[in-house]
Image 1: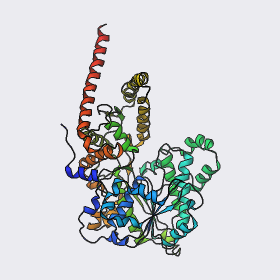
Image 2: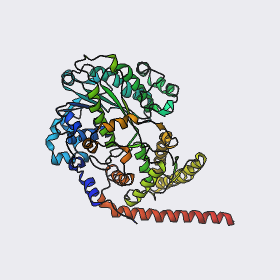
Image 3: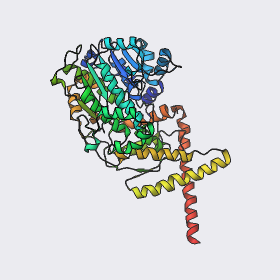
Length: 523
């Protein structure tokens, strides 16, 4: 009944070996050649996507120049500790063991997007950026759906506006790639590859969040955000208005991943370092917490492996640098106002639906059970809201109250109600994708893909048509097990036993419940 991932997969996951280094190269890479001697700056480099982007640049573009990482540092951290914390991640194992000299290209710069004055960058570092940077990847943002509008506006809008002003001063800027989100045009009903057109300007929102107190902004949020899905999506759409007005003459492109999930191939299959969004939802099912999920099973799931997103960013910078440049601020031409936008969404030719996604997650979850299994992992996937309310009450909250009452009485601890509040919050936050099929355009992204040579397509893969989802979910679940739950493959036999025990406990529970109902009926 139970099996383990292949030996090769297990070794890669356990050792953190870098797959990109092992991949055979078909010929010269045009993209890698472009990055030769190029100095890159990455904001948000310590985030999920930023880390994968950094490793990819160092491994697949070996002759790249410097890579500046704009990071926040507190009084307890410095450059040395930041570097140690960064490269301690399993995804840097291949570089640490095989090409440690590549890490010498990385240079930290102290900066904070919450600081309005040049991001808090020191004068010397700011001059270095202006003089030396060729390519910018702006990955900095707050992606939490439940963050306040004031915070989200400061991070996603005001900070971008300030950084665009810094970028205009850069002497050799060839490309500025901004990471947005595929759902920023949700108010239009169709996820088109054009800059979002919000009803409020970026300048107006910046003034609103900066001049109004926190309470006023919070009370006004439902009115201001309106039809947008959440504060994050709303402020990312406003950010595109900033790009339209303040960045249109820069060599700028916008890449919009939909919902990021673990890496597919690189630097390590299945790697992830967070439980945001879909990953968090899958983990609640994997652990046996979630028993009812409101979802339209036939709707396409626009989930994107994070390494595919990183590859698309790298390719977008290469492409925009060929067609639109800013050389010492001399190229302010009206013909340069077009800003290319690339949606990274699911394949239309070979889509994965939510039904298949959760089926694969459940399948591989039972093949790779964890020792942290809470109850047997089964879940009812359906689209009936009334039934969902009943199931949540019966299968989530009533057991949670009973277990917490028991736990508090005997052990002084009550945790299950908190678990299920988080499960409910997570399910609600993803309702906009689980229950609605979005019409989306990806023609510009396909056009970018078709510009790549055979070698570059092998090195910088972001073709969603070719994803083997069954194989992918094998590494995805293994990644959740190892990198999120910190449960190594050595404990797989114990995980199998925990799964069997939870199954027997489930049978016993249902048996007691049926006997109780039968007793009531015969009274």
